[in-house]
Image (cartoon, rainbow, N blue to C red; front, side, top):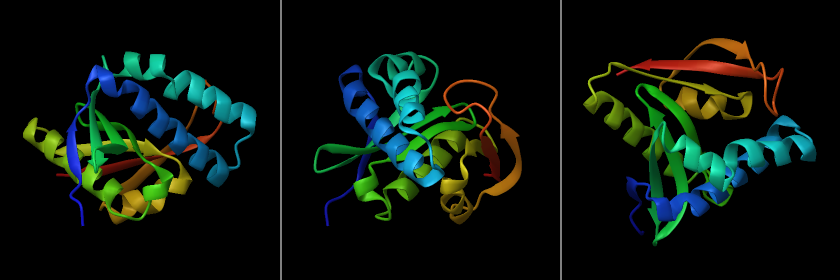
Length: 157
């Protein structure tokens, strides 16, 4: 079985990361019942090359590779996982778990004692399996998913 490699993102990886994020949004749209217009806006506003470029200035991005192909990503801002997406073709293979465990390690090494994130209901089972606790919810106030509920998760490290 080939080994999953997790490494920092470089500028040359932004297009592949954009593709992974948009594939994740497509999966999310199917799971959450988003329209094609909402999916298009998600990809344009949050998953495009330009959006990932801007986000990479605010967060640390790490990639999961299998056989030199990027199949997942996680972005971290201090104690918060901002994004964690795995190519839907690789769901259930341990890639998400490896990325989550890597994020925990990076956050702990940064001297922090807690990890947090916001997620949609479609991903809640994964985060609960990672030992996180749902501590509340919020309703999005803008953007392509305005008015949708996001579950808030935390975990002590």
